[in-house]
Amino acid sequence: MHSILRRYPLPMLFIVAFCAVSGVYAYGLGPAQQRLVVANTATNLANLRNDPLGTMIASAFVAEAAPWMWVAFAIVGLFPVAHRFGNVRTLVLVGAAQVVGTLISEGLLAWRISTGAMPTSARYLDDVGPSYVIASALVATILYGAEPLMRTARHGHWLFDRIPSRWWRIGAAVGLAFLAPHLFNRLDRLDVAAVGHVVAMLVGAGVGLLFARRERTSAGSGGAGPRTELAPAPAFSEA
Image (cartoon, rainbow, N blue to C red; front, side):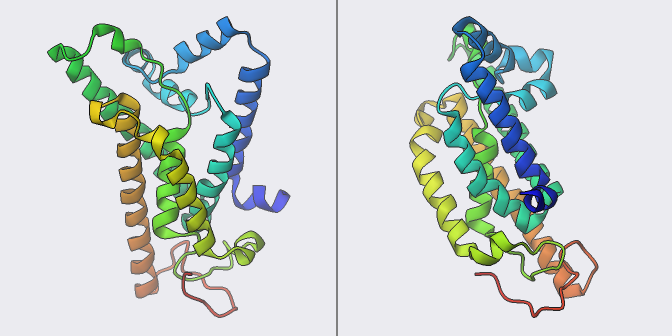
């Protein structure tokens, strides 16, 4: 456990924080208090206007239903991405997915309100949960796997030595398929959450592609990036 925390602090801290918030929300608060938490952390137009950054961060740690399900998906999505790209780049990837997914989906809603297609009460929609973060991580795992082009001394870990990259990809694909009915529900009606999920997944794919191309460029040029310092053991190709 100490080794995993030391090498993958971002996934571990996210999961621990999410479990702590979920535990307090589910077992420590009454219905009225739960409603207040959701109202104050939802990434709706009203909250984004008052505190955009705080709202987008807090929202990712509040789940109204089945919070423990998200922990399993976070493991399958976040750990492989952190192993492949590193903790800082993983933070950039999921952070960008959360921010861009929120801004575009809520921006579209604001436009629809302005045209009369949606009522003004839609400014106060309840939209909380880690789904933007986890959906983007699952997509990145499916597309780019858990292993970099070259194994490095800095990022090698027994967990990924014993479980090949292809199994992380398969697990992420199964998780995404399981979540699909929830993620894309009412997409044809431009539902805020559904639009946000699509955007978050596209951002995860796009940012992951940028990182993967940078790896290839660094490996090809012999640059001293975070993924180019090879271990004495022979390198192997991604599974």
